[in-house]
Image (tube, rainbow, N blue to C red; front, side, top):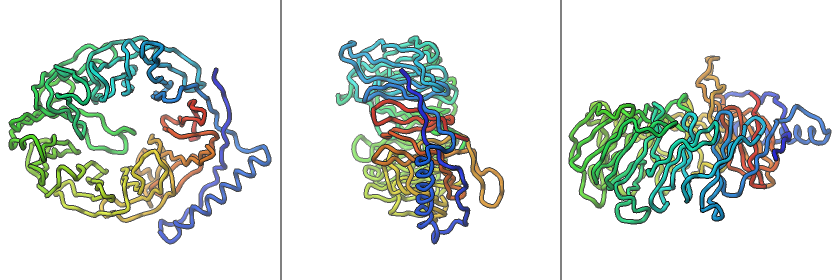
Length: 471
């Protein structure tokens, strides 16, 4: 049974435009909140108002996971002891919530990793699952099981293939030989890396790796047009126990670049896998030093003092690198020199959006926090957006200051959920430090995401609500 209802839609009167200045931003949101409250009260009291947002409600069990595609939504139920611990996957049409198909997984145990690749839904065992870990491909059109492998999903490539890891001895989590490690790298265990076709599971190429070899993946630098999940990897990078580095094309598995770097430190303090960050390969030289090499030619770019065991690794933040300190605050590095450009104890989260950074003091991404717009080069605050949880990035609007032309193709959707379940939805525009109210939705508990003009949230009842957003 699918319920169709209407959400309340706010008036789309433009927010007052003013120059970016800290002096007026503090009071700006109080004025906007008062205006919106009056608008909402007027619409509710009169029983009339602008057209509502059409919504479908899809039944879902507590603990179910959700994956959203372009025209359908997939609900993965938790493990069912009455069905031999095999999970059920259901597909619903996004436009009206109609059930399209349901299927039981062919293997028992939790398949906690869910990825949509083309017309295949890939489900894989959690890293904490007991052995043997499994990966299953499901045809999104019919629900048919396309393939099933005793291996773990690692990533999808830019070419559309699925990368699987099959350890020689899969002993499960917490046992000797466990190959989990930070920064998305695998380490220690011997096994085989495979690239398979997502629709059939056919092996495109495979690579046997001995114990002690670390592996990772790299793609183009993140930009506004790479989608909400960032760019997909184009190459695999491996480093052996002798320091040998090999870069392999993920389309063919062939080695395209290689070099002999200094032998990594012995196991123990400072022994962490290298990390690919943009066009750099970051390699620890021991417990107190970090060196950056160019990924194209392996030329040594810079070396900085770094507490490798305690200091989080740098990560891309648009045109700069950022690292969030355990005690709070952020440091921002120049990727060309490794020099600290600026630091600020206030920020716990940075999101690159076009030429800007969105900063918040809330480290948890699922919590609405005060968002500030920063200049990445200096850390200067350019404007404030108020308290919002960013739930989606998709092609949309945005104007470069003073140019009258689009600054980037990213549309940001933010939500603010109240304790009574009423949820404010708005477009966020960092370029003008302004917002455009879209709607107030009832009975929302959280777990929201926006994609392809739709907003999907968990309702207070545990069911899934779907709303089509206005342009």
